Image 1 (spheres, rainbow, N blue to C red):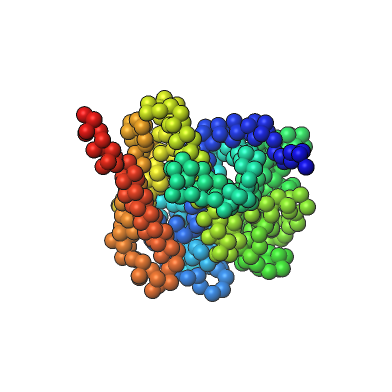
Image 2: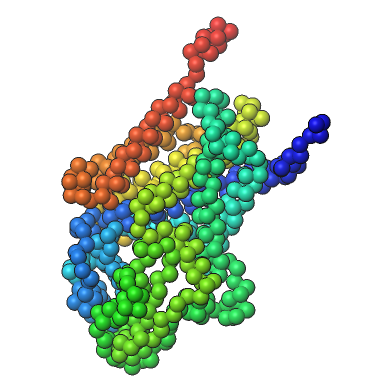
Length: 523
């Protein structure tokens, strides 16, 4: 047969997809790197919090439920310190976090604290940790006013989704690329192979995590339905969709009913499971409401199945099973949050998230190397800007994270606003690495120097944890403190890999002796 086989994907379509694929990565690569890296850390937020909050290393959770009336309410009263309480909530302990976390809102301010299961209030943690810093940085960039951070992250997620789809179209030989990695060849060829390999190998996860991330914030970024049905009132929307319940204060003082019977009734309605969070709204008022959320560690869905009780009488106010659309939304949200207790899957989420960072980083590096060849030995300002951005958003982001963790172990416990000082260290370090990359980038960013800084900081974090808490990896293993041991081991592995990368980059950047000899002879 002389007729040529018709290609599944035409060259014209591939060329059309190349432009958005390239420029979405170049312009939003740094932001996507931040989102993916902080999302990967958030998978082990509880373990990182345990490392950054040594006072919470109190051993395993005691067998049996925690009594809210005997262990929780007294802690709330201590945190209130005689002030009138308006609202409060407690996050109950579980296997990964053996302490209770409190937030109390009073008429004259807010208070927070951590306590053991017997109601002993621990010293202030003095840090935001991963749960209150790395995790919010992942989904809102800490820009919550007007939901602007959610909008930015959602826009970047849509761009990531477009990049993934266009990448599949561009790399039509997707299954062949899966088995291709030429690390011995040209640096640019190796980058492209690694970019293709991580893109193909983890493509289902990247598609899932990106789509579910967009779905979670759909009511915020696509508010047309909420606006049409609820006049834009998100509170009413969530009350109806998720089975929430709220009512204003009555202004009439009334005592709180016992909380333990309410938790027992919630468990009966769930047909099993444990309580994870208990909220008390309008505390001390006749219109007080108690909300009990179910722990989601035993199933994929993020449906917390909230049960609402009258805070004065203890009567059931509302318990609503989600409809099919909301149930689907909760399952998709659960796939993204990975709140279920399954350690192999949790590690896969972490490793696949880091693979996303490699995918984004190699894409930016490949663009840089390709433009370097096109522009010769004097690349333009655009190339240098992208090179500095790539350096600041990869090694720079690692340096900032490790600098914050090192500051967590070095800063004295009693200094005012200690948690804000840590945050300041993070952003100052990050800005410093970006400035360093911009100043040093002429023909190549300072990869080797910043990789060496990553190695030294990661090793310093392990040593500082040992010095300040007395808990080195051997002792952590003997005490079965797997959270602290895991963080220390990952830090040690990071130090080793970064140091090896730094040494290899130094050798790569060093001129070849034969080249020097030729230059000398020519001179």
